[in-house]
Image (tube, rainbow, N blue to C red; front, side):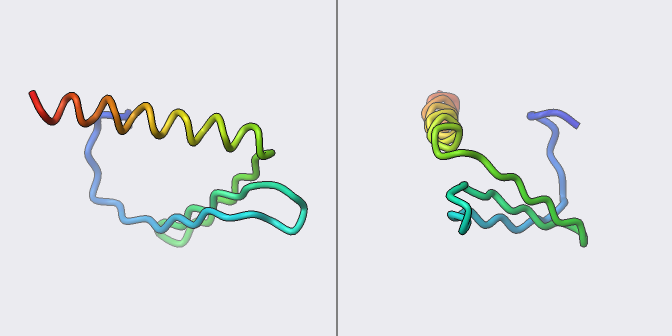
Length: 63
């Protein structure tokens, strides 16, 4: 499965700080739980990538 492959899988995502000073992205789908911890600098980089992807997606959508 790639970035452009559609799927009917439903998932829940939670994002927040941990008590250890990390940023956790927690994904739950079909009974599987995936916690991913990032230091704040990595989380900032991920946020920048998400923002850049949103800008690119808007450009595709308006064509």
